[in-house]
Amino acid sequence: METQFLTPAEPARLRDRALGALMGAFIGDALGVGPHWYYDLDQLVADYGPWIDGYTRPRPGRYHTGLEPGQPSQSGILLEMTLRSLVDCGAYDEADFCRRLDEELFPQLDGTPMNGPGGYTSQSIRDVWRKRVQEGQPWGSVGGNADNTEAAERIIAIAVRHALAPAELARAVIANTALTQTDGTVLAMTAAYAAVLGMLVEGHRLDSEISDKLMTRVKAGVLPFHTITRGKLEAPAPNQQEARHESLFASPDALLTPSGIARAAHDPAICIEPAAKAALLYGLPCAVYHQFPAAYYLAARFPNDFESAVLHAINGGGQNLARAMLTGALSGAMVGLSGIPQRFITGLERSAELLALVNQLVDAMEAVTSS
Image 1 (tube, rainbow, N blue to C red):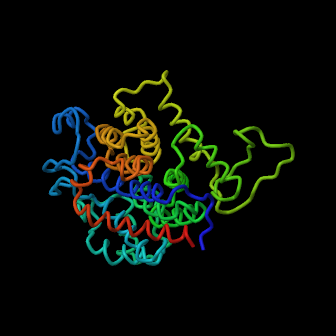
Image 2 (spheres, one colour):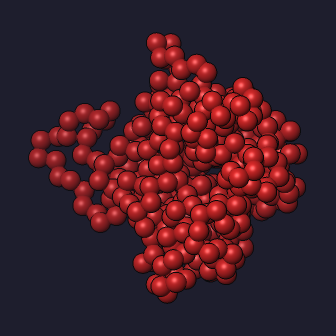
């Protein structure tokens, strides 16, 4: 049985937040399909106008060519695959997830980028496909050093399912991420993002206090991050011994980032206008150290406004699909499904099927809560 760290508030509000996180991620993914990966921001405006406000069609010859507005990229497809595995198994099951990659995804790939479901296959998935399919290496030996957010996009479902059991959340997210990405920084930042998302599903806010709450869990042995400081990052006590555990990340810095960014988002002395320009500040590329800070900023900047959060993520350009997907999950958890404008739901392909699926996941989550 999963050990819950905190008792959630009203069950209906918990369900709303969990559903919002998942549907927010699917929406963010589909919003990015058309204007994905424009590093020439003038060309982005030329192709889509000064403000993108909904689902769009990719231009011929660009990423995801052939997809229609509201359809998912491979990121959304992988999120759904992870979600279905969680629903069918009741919790994270690595063997089942790996089987699905072997049987459902890999036969559709050929190792090239502009191929596969969703019209594009990321570097980390291509690397794993080569090692697994062409070289026959076993699972556990195929992860690589790609620093993108590919794993972070699919573990959104794991973070929601295990949000009420943060130790299990961290274990499952780290294990799933390591299947395709083994860089220590990627693992730490992905685990931290999942821990933040889990707290938002619980009902906490993305504010200046969230890092202190995360550090409380570190010191309680719930989250596997190294720390030697006391209180609010004060000096360790004389002769204080360090905790030793092989699974510890080298530092808790990835957990400390969200509060600082949330504080900056509401500091009147810090002005980023429009908020989409945060993408330029934190970086347009794909790496986790560009994407997570921008997602935290936009979700914190618009704590009660899902539409503004995801659309500023999209209009920032660059790797805006990942930015919108990560932001959509955070913002969706904060406002709940009830706070997401209906037009984003109705415009999403197979939205009724996805809603039924995410409700099944939340059913499993609530079953643990009541047991």
